[in-house]
Length: 113
Length: 113
Image (cartoon, rainbow over all chains, first blue to last red; front, side, top):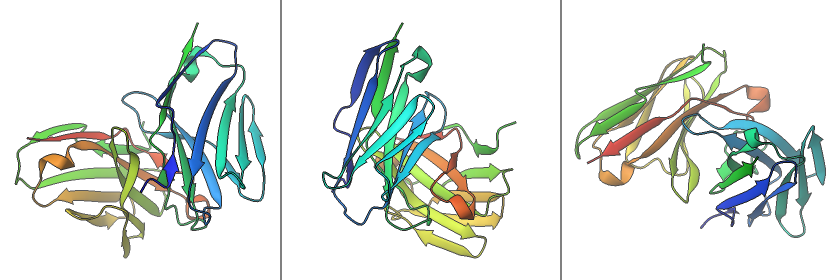
């Protein structure tokens, strides 16, 4: 059973526009959520996170929104840049700093110039 | 220089062979992790280690074993490789105070024929 789901395998947006990547989870015990970004031939890199006590966290062009009642989070990238083209993984944990992350399948974002 | 290195980067082997994947880090982190990535499944945790004497199974540990030789080194072994262990393997590290924000190596692509 996939506890963290990214239902869109791919997304294509124009440079300068908003990219919205979505993630759904099923386990109500999850209390911390993260987004990782992965370029080809490299390992994932941490991008942004949010605790379940918040509904929004912002870092520059990146904002993560959390809707606990819907068990849904999203990553907004504004404005999108060609260098943002990568695979984005959503991850969740309910084990409070154990590092036991449950990852989604990933969404490939392509930002066209 | 990379903070988390993995060797080999690519490996092709045959069914039944014993394989060891190695991970080294210079970040000084106590915590280390092994994941595998499969298409459509995201990353799944195989084993994790909080220090040299503390090793724990993750989601999918069957068919794998690990060794934490030192704080900086964490090896993953496939005792008798099988084709469905063909995957991309990542090592990661984290600081104990921020275990969810993990630093990944570049990955090892393993093919079992």
